[in-house]
Amino acid sequence: MIKKIKITEGVEDQRLDKFLKKIFSNLSQSFIEKNLRKKNILINDLTVKSKYSLKKNDLLIIKNYSEEMYSDHNPQKNKKNINRKYIKNFHDSILFENDNFIVIDKWCGISTQGGTNINISIDTIIKNISEHYNLVHRLDKDTSGLLIIAKNLKYTKIFGKLFKSQNIKKTYLALCEGKPKMIESYVDLLLDNDQKDKIYTKTFYKILSNNKRISLIQFQPKTGKKHQLRIVAKNLGSPIVGDSKYNMNNSNKNENLKLNAHKLEFKIDNNEFSFRSVLPKDFTNFMKRNKIIFKK
Image 1: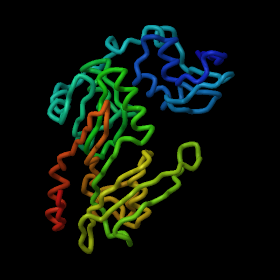
Image 2: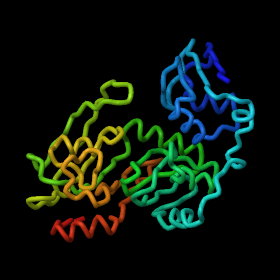
Image 3: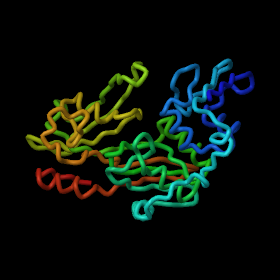
């Protein structure tokens, strides 16, 4: 069954996910995100993101609609039973926690959010702990490092605004093959997205250490787009070690992706926060084997 809802005056300018939660009060964020990715939820027959701002006369289309699925969708009732080791891994990865948010040091190999053929993710884990926990940003499956989880709606919104206004300073470390021509520079790059539009990105990089084969590069993205740093590294002629998608040479193809979300800095209510990831063993071992020195 397909359900169609026309957006009327007074409803426009709301975020799509917020609107869906109002008309179907028991929908979880993960359920909405999953069905957006599967193209079961469309606007004017087009795929959009959960943060899409509704416009008057937009047509919301819900495919595979059923009253049972949308009216009775209860995050706790439908919560997955997951292996307790994942809960333990999550708790072991916590670097900081207060009443409003958690910062974890995500391990390589686990997806941030669920999707096709993804049985376990950070989102799955946190929803098993509390239905009020929300992801506020994402990391690629094979990227390790710092990830923020809001513990309530208020801080979900606060972090959303901080990321949107680029008031969170993000620093990544990557082990790359070869060496860029310049020691440090800004890179302005247009990326293709799924709709074939061009997305503007801006990234600062600096070589921290290198030899003839490998460079340790610090990246500071000013924008946050999918695979941004991996594509920038490729365009610099120094693709990231272990990147099976963008490293065509990949002489270290048996290695994990050597990309770490290393540092986060931000300010909330006049309180300054700064967090630093502990580099994974496979990252530091690779540096030792290749005689790459990192001075913190």
